[in-house]
Length: 238
Image (tube, rainbow, N blue to C red; front, side, top):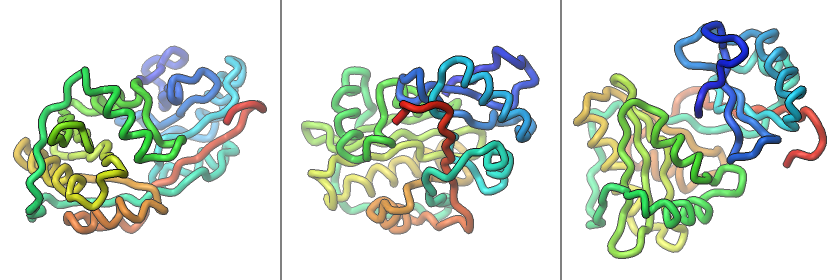
């Protein structure tokens, strides 16, 4: 997501991005490597967004320590996510023989179609969201699994020595074929090879299939998960 510092310049604590290309719904998140926003910072930004005609504000996935000022500014819980961690010491062994390759620009439509089938409407990515996921970290890896048509994909990122499994999706028609496990293993190998010391991933609490996959490939649940909050500013937004 691109930061929007137009109002406060270097003093900004928050970044604003359109949600799935919409102008009536935005995502508001704390800026990394900046002081945490206070309730006044958040309320000021909400007031500006209201003046611009924004109808609904969502937050990014927030850690427990980031929630209080948003809740004090009138945000409410939208969804909770599991947060998992992998120490990259013992990588998963994969027996399924599934071919991977680097994703190409021409794969975008096929990848997004898989994403829509794999996730509900709220979480499914559009082209901008996919680009954001690929560009979210200084180093990234975008791979697809294919023995003909694409059956799944993974976007992995690394910032310094920390790795992120940004996005993983497998076509529901090809579940339980080992595709997800091979993509996870590929991501973890790349992260360790390029200097990461830890990898993290999150998933919806009700997504039992994804949780089972991550646990089976060596991730462990963190004690506290993440939370997405929302605030309705005006009527009409989804």
